[in-house]
Image 1 (cartoon, rainbow, N blue to C red):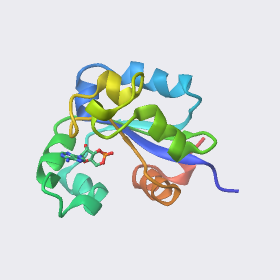
Image 2: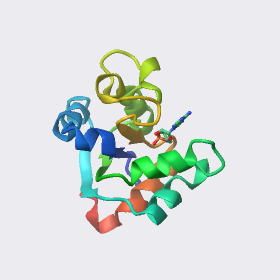
Image 3: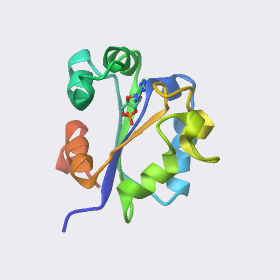
Length: 139
Ligand code: CMP
């Protein structure tokens, strides 16, 4: 049976400000189980590949510059209805629109430097989880 997962990255803005611990605690407090996690610096090539779906967007080059400016923390999280539940936990893409108490409301700077990534579907969660991790790392 496949597991109910989502993929998150704590982005360079939040990592560099020292929010990693607080954000991970927020995930756990909201019922997510960490089944894989690593800190890494995305290469230009890896960032372009991860965000390929946005390559025609006007913000794409800025996004790649931002996502490669420093380390990220990537994690696979498990919970019932993981994708939808996690999107509620992190709040709207633009922190100005995010609900009170969400990760982005608490820690994000703006629509680009928005502290965390969350998968947008079960299919993409599986693809994104395997972008960073192999099955043997899920525990
Ligand atoms: P994320 O959930 O990782 O998915 C794509 C990212 O692109 C998004 O978070 C933001 O970091 C960035 N992004 C989305 N929309 C915009 C926008 N209008 N302007 C700048 N950056 C954006």
